[in-house]
Length: 237
Length: 257
Image 1 (cartoon, each protein chain N blue to C red):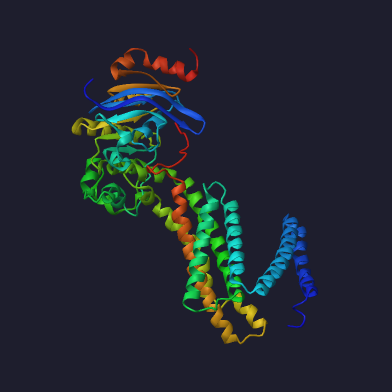
Image 2 (tube, rainbow over the protein chains, first blue to last red):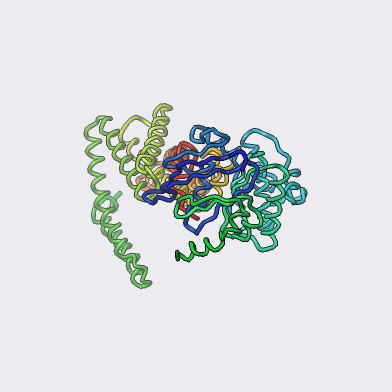
């Protein structure tokens, strides 16, 4: 499976009285696309947010390259582990300002034009208002924004759920190409098994806040993964 | 002052409240009860404070003046916290902000010798500072709370890009402070043209020299601008922290999956 870029061990998370993650153990291989799948409410998005410590786990540990992230400065961690959300959430008066938000906070320079090219957008839109772009373009710009910090891992939380079919496919291609060309490690939360089959190298199944297994994507889909998910979603054994 | 200083005149002015009640009944605004409560409360409270101020003046001891102002600050903090439902630690935040604004503004006026160190000046001026700071603190707290709720996604996105809580919340803080301060800034801009502010109106009615009244009104307006800005800033800077952890995490991110 290769080197584990991220290792999750005994992870638990509670929001108030509600225990959302009840014990997750998983390894995210370096340079691969790992899809986190599971019925809705399983804790997929919550798991993603513990990896860059947007939320604080109640117990357990997450290691990045073997270092416990609980002992890392959260800001430094988030510069190494980027995130793309369900909606673009670009802020700033221009696309350039939006994309360079991360590097500017870190006191670093980055080339907005180059970043836009990297995600397949024309550099000339750098001066436009983010809201002037289509949602698909905005989502690509938000990938550029995450890339601007040159992260080692990118977490993607249902990144195509707000997009139409054409933009969805283009974003999928973009993410796969980025992964192949740069060796970026990607963790993808998706409820769309077709998308997972098109994109993922590995599949991690979460059910009711517990990790239920991990497979190579090939094994998962040839070994009745879809059928299993249908049963989980319908609630029948 | 004939005709204005008696209880009878206050009761006669109540006749105007009947107009408000009639309007409420006629248009079914459902405000009669609230108007009634407001009238009774204000009557009792104003009468009481009149006697209290009279008592404090009679004691001729600055300690009681300070004590009265402190009670006013506590009550203002409590009122603000009741309006700012859902803001963690609202009571202490609001009390500190209003207290800081009151101490700093009144202290400055005393140090610079703008007003004499007597209850006759300190109590009414303090009341204005505390009242206005209270309203501003309430507005800022409610706005910060609402905006943090409405813009969770932006906040998470900023934090995920390595922003500190302060950096992530700064656009929200800016708009909250601005919206809370604009009413007073506008009132200051239009003072003397559109309306005659309360202190000045009161002095002129009381028979003071209009120029003297204007001088005091200026002190009041600038004092209020200063104290309101201070209250807004302190409450803004303190309040956002309640919504984040020290590790730059938003508290209580709703569990979406």
